[in-house]
Length: 139
Image 1 (spheres, helix red, strand yellow):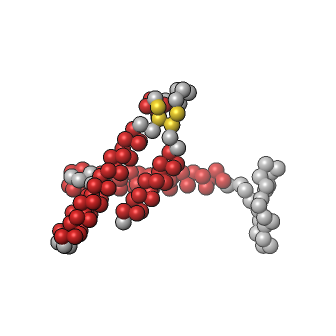
Image 2 (cartoon, helix red, strand yellow):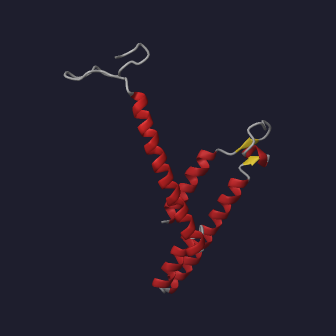
Image 3 (cartoon, one colour):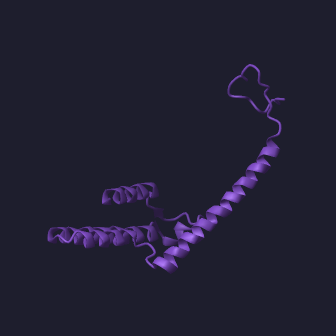
């Protein structure tokens, strides 16, 4: 049962019948599945935030905690100097990233107000790629 608005990509294999009917029934079941997994993902996110904020209490300090761990298990003096250098770079580019996110557009309100046409914004794609490269290089 093919109407003129739906064009199949390939011919139907022998022994099968082309049927685009029943899509409404499938979409209802897919919607139910999506809602269930959305609820589960939201619960997982809430549990993660709860453990990060109330149990670990180091929200957003993953890099720093890893560096502290390395400093404690390898007490070599040369490594301590490198540790401080890596810590300075990590803190520096994280602070730079925060300021680049805040001041990504001039005027700043252009970041969230699409009605502002005057001003300019940075290329956010390049900003995200640079952040990913720095995070990858840090490992």
